Length: 204
Image 1 (cartoon, helix red, strand yellow):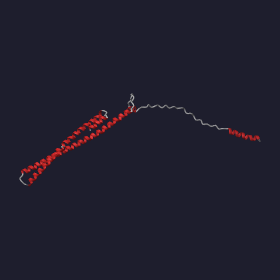
Image 2 (tube, rainbow, N blue to C red):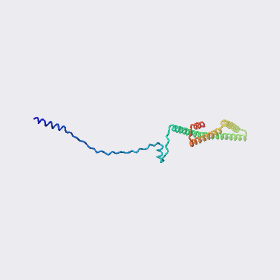
Image 3 (cartoon, rainbow, N blue to C red):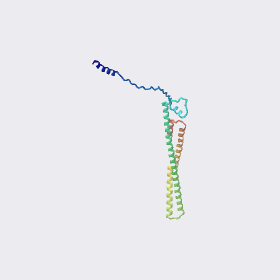
Image 4 (cartoon, rainbow, N blue to C red):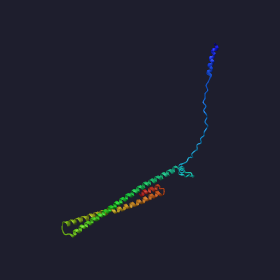
C-alpha cells in the first residue's frame, strides 16, 4: 500500500522536472561596412566657379560686415542717382514742352498783331480814298480801334516777353540735358559716392 502510494508521487515529480528547451537559430549576416565619401565644403564663389566650368585655385576672401555695408551704401547711392536721373528726364521733357508752347504763343500773338495792323491800314486807306459819308467814318473809327488794340497788345507783349520766356525754357532744357548726360556718365564709369548725389541735387 505504501509502495502504491509512492509511485504516483515519483511519476508526478519526474513529469514536473522535465523542461522543454526550444530555440530558433537565425543565421548571422556578414558585417557590411559602408564608406561614405565626404563632400568638401565650398563657399558660394567656388561653387559658382565650378558650375561655370572654371576652377579657381586662389582662395576666395570671406565677406565681412564692412564689405556688406560698403556694398549696400554704394547700391543705395546708385539707386538715388537713378531716381534723380528719372526726375531730370522728366524735367527735360517738361521744359521742352513748355518752351514749345510759349514759342507757339509768341508766334500766334505776333501773327495776330500783324493781321490787326494790316486790317487797320487797309481800312484807313479805303477811308482816305473815298469821299465824305457814314461808311467812311465807320471805316476810320474801325481802323482807329484796331490800331489801339494792336498798340495795347504790343505793350502787353513787351511786358510779358513771351519770346524771352521761350528762350529761358530752351536754356533750361539744354542745362537739364547736360546734367542728364553727366549722371549717365557717372553711373557708367565709376562708383558714385554720396557727395556726388549731393552735388547733383544742388544742380537740379
